[in-house]
Image 1 (cartoon, protein in one colour):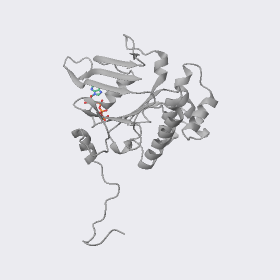
Image 2 (cartoon, helix red, strand yellow; image 1 turned 45 degrees about the vertical axis):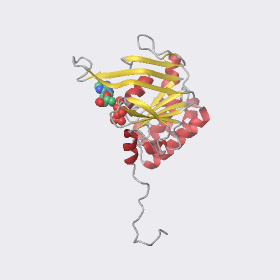
Image 3 (cartoon, helix red, strand yellow; image 1 turned 90 degrees about the vertical axis):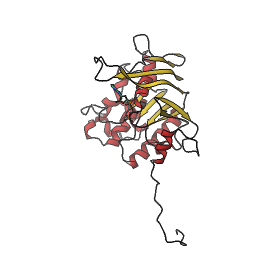
Image 4 (cartoon, rainbow, N blue to C red; image 1 turned 180 degrees about the horizontal axis):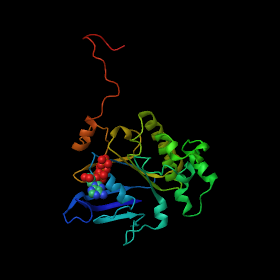
Length: 263
Ligand SMILES: Nc1ncnc2c1ncn2[C@@H]1O[C@H](COP(=O)(O)OP(=O)(O)OP(=O)(O)O)[C@@H](O)[C@H]1O
C-alpha cells in the first residue's frame, strides 16, 4: 500500500533561509507498509523517525526518492495530496494537548476532519467517542478540562473519523502514564481488529511492540533496517541491541542467600 523508495531528506541548519548545507537525516531510506499491516519504526531520539512519519503523511516532500501510495505518487508535483488520499492517511501524535485547541469541545475536535465534506453530525461523533470508550458527556466539554488519557483517545477518535486505511502513530502513547498507556495500546489493537487499518507505529520504546507489530524496522545509519524479531536471540543491529539492553527487568529478582529458592 505504502512504499518509500530510496528516500533522501535533510534540513538546513539555522532554518530554511540559511545558506548552510542541508544536514542529512534520511539517506537511501526504504520502507513498505502492506494493507492492514502494523509496522513498527524504532530508533533513538533524533534518528529521523518522525521525519519519516511526516513524509508518509505528505507533510514534507523528500529531497530525493519516491513515495507511492497504492502504486501512485503520494503527492502531486506541487506537494499536494489528493483529498481521498488525505482522508486515507491520518495521524496521532505524542502530545494531545499540542494537537488540540484547548477551547474546542470534544465534538469540535473529533468533527474537524468531517466538516470539510459536510459529514459531521452529533450522532456520528458520539459513535466515534463510543468506539474509543469515551462517554457522550465529553461532546460538550472543552479539551482543557479533559485528562491526558481522555484527550489522546479523542485524538484517536478524530484520526478514525474518516475511516483511514493507514494511521501514523508517532510516539502516540509516550506521554501517558503506564496504566493509561496499556489501555490505549489495547484500544488500538481492538480498533485494528475491527477496522483492519494499517499502522505505522513510531516509537523509541521497544517494550510497546511485544505482540503489537507485524514487522519492525529500526533506524540505523539514517535508514530503516528491517529486523525479523526484535525480541529474538539475534544477531540484532547495534542500535536495537542498545535499546533492548536499556529495558529494565519488569520486577528485579531479590538476591537470596545461596541454597535458598525464591518461594
Ligand atoms: N523542521 C526541522 N528543521 C530542522 N531540523 C529538523 C527538523 N525536524 C527535525 N530536524 C532534525 O532532524 C533530526 C531527526 O529528527 P526527528 O524528529 O525526525 O527524529 P526522531 O527520531 O523522531 O526523534 P525523537 O524520538 O526525539 O522525536 C534531528 O536532528 C532534528 O533536530
